[in-house]
Amino acid sequence: MDVRTDVTLPAEGYRLEIDPSGVRLHVADAAGEFYGRQTLRQLIGPDAFRAASIHRGQQTIPCGVVTDHPRFGWRGCLLDVARHFRTKAEVLRFIDLLAAHKLNVLNLHLTDDQGWRIEIPEFPKLTEVGGWRKSSMVGRHDGPERDGRPHGGFYPTDDLREIVAYAAARSVTVVPEVDIPGHARAAIAAYPELGPETGEPWEVWTSWGISTSLLNTKKSTLDFFKAVFDHVLDIFPSEVIALGGDEVPGATEEHGRFVREIARHLVERGRRPLGWDEVLEAGDLPPMVIGSWQSEAAGARAVAAGHDVVMCPEDHVYLDHRQSDHVDEPIPVGYLRTLESFYGYEPVPADFPSGKTILGTQAQVWSEHLDTVRRVDYAAFPRLCAFAEVAWSSPEGRDYAEFLPRLRDHHLPRLDALGVEYRPLDGPLPWQTRPGVPGRPR
Image (tube, rainbow, N blue to C red; front, top):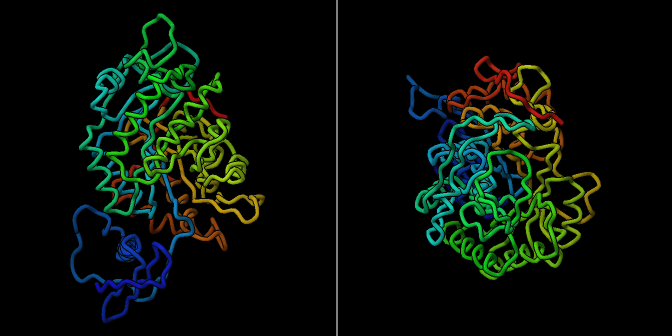
């Protein structure tokens, strides 16, 4: 294939020309070349997505010209590895799946109440103590029942460097997330001096939901997390670094100051902090990226305050939420969000402030109820396929009736070739159900 740079193409854009004489690819940049090659892979057929060739005989591809570029520069997906740990190999596989769908941001959620997943050599107890819990809640309920099975794991520094490099080779940026000042119980279990003084021993949380255990706002705690983030910056070259800031019950002005100080620390080191939309309440923040998850209105407030916005509203793009109201749907939590509703999502609201733009959009894979990679596959696909098209393409002419046969006849066979255990269009297979495990629908 003849590859040439074309400066007239938009960022990440390409023009793929196929005729009987051969294949030519004109690209704006390295990302454009990667996406052009992905399109050629699609044209070759599903077997091009297998780990090794099984093709026999002469191979042909259709002639034509494809000119394409993405609508948004941020086409992301969050993967929560704190609630349920995913091995390095599983993260690399997930990056491959994002890249196959021309998604370009992996928001890697590394810390939470239920586990701390990033090695910080200066503070070894974060992984020695905070990296595992004694048991886990099964499903979603208000009772004391737990599975009695220890769960844990963490990523050594070199493994994270490998993940970053692997992603970069596939035009995916890894945006790490270390949560403050809430979602921090694993850190407090490791170093109790970071939390409130209760006189009781701390343990990594075995429940789901929102913990009321917050970091204290002492200078020593602030300095601790500045050191943590410095190590994060050493591993992750991403311009954007996520600091969380969501679901902080009982937050005080001092907690707001804590968030502001960490945000400024990141800015001083040449990075852009990302926080969930609750951080807007902290006030006097440096320019940030705001993940608008509670509502689209929060995104409008963020741009009015001078921040950039990634649209990721819970009631539209949370992949852990249930896919149907059928009794066989496993662990039905959250809002009902079907394949069709994902395809119908429009990231820019009709009433978004005039003259303002968004960076892009992001789907979320929270993992409280996804304890295996097979469960992640089931929750994410094929809805993430629909989301990827929303993030890449213009909304004009978007038609679910046109999308569905393309998905069924062409893309699901690609997922089969990739070994993805997606949810069948007509409902879960028997081994994808979770009989008797309670959910909590909304």
